[in-house]
Length: 475
Ligand SMILES: CC(C)[C@H](C(=O)O)[C@@H](O)C(=O)O
Ligand code: SF4
Image (cartoon, rainbow, N blue to C red; front, top):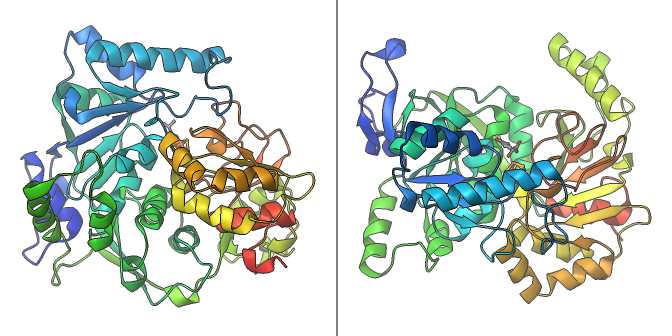
């Protein structure tokens, strides 16, 4: 980052936030102290941090830049009743007490602004281009879709940010992921990011901030951009970013926390200047031909074990790399899949639409488009879970809720839900899902559960056919 050439988007945002530059050069350079513009908080990773402040007798440095919501542990039905599970109830009650004591704005269950932390920030216009955003949550990378430098942090760092509004961070490397050409019809941001992770691997982004660029990215909606940045962490990256443009501004304009009037114009001028300079040099570059992509699904137990829906489950003996071969064998055993079988023949018993990856309004519209006039296959349970209560309200206003219910899906309240097994929405041992979430690790959606990561359109078509499918596979 000491280059004389132009700067990348990530470097510009970083430079604008350096409070104290670390001493030394090159690999010996000490971390920089970075100012944090927005700190998002949820019930899972905040209790110890608040305890730490309390023990040290310190106040929260900037309550006005801190915002909390309840998401991981909340049930998505009967939310007017006390949470039945004692662990979840304690988590949520602790967050409420802490927020009250330290003066943090909190969106509790039942509030119109409650929802998954990474859906709530953008929807309120809290997440803005050029900001540094942190949260004790790995999928904070979502906010990079706005041209923010957004990173997941650990609990001790959460405490540091609470106490000082700064964070000690090591400089990163930069990687450009350029997607040129036009995405074929039916290919979404989710398919694109699953293909990227399959290509570079779950460790491919380690130490890097990824910048997604190219024609195909420029044409994507904010929702799709968020899906892509969200899963940067699944490639091991520190963050993912997309330069702000008219689509970003259109999304932000008029949101409750977006700048207004003359402030808006000044903000847009500053945001325009954040783009990567033409002469900037990335530490690594990856190119993807957007036109070559098709709907993409995972067959294994990490997000990099994916393939085009039209392909077959891999045959481990044919995988040259030994580590990958052993991983594939293990994954197929856990997933109970036959090597070489067509992915389209994999039958599921559960379909989950939701999460911070794909629980936004555009995702729900895509699902409704497929489900309209159709039925969820017999024996398949389908959950549609909005990422926030506002997303739910909008979906209701657009008549989507009725479409889901008429098709036989369960239309729920907002939360992380079946993305992870921290609330009542879980897979039973041996159950198999098509899920729009971001992680397919062993037991992620419930002990012994098996997960195939898919796009919302594929999730909906799979619900109708009962086997992994794209909308084009339906009559
Ligand atoms: C609970 C939280 C710490 C975790 C994360 O950091 O990502 C969760 O959101 C997840 O998706 O696994
Ligand atoms: S929806 Fe899933 S990935 Fe996103 S914050 Fe919640 S648990 Fe983590």
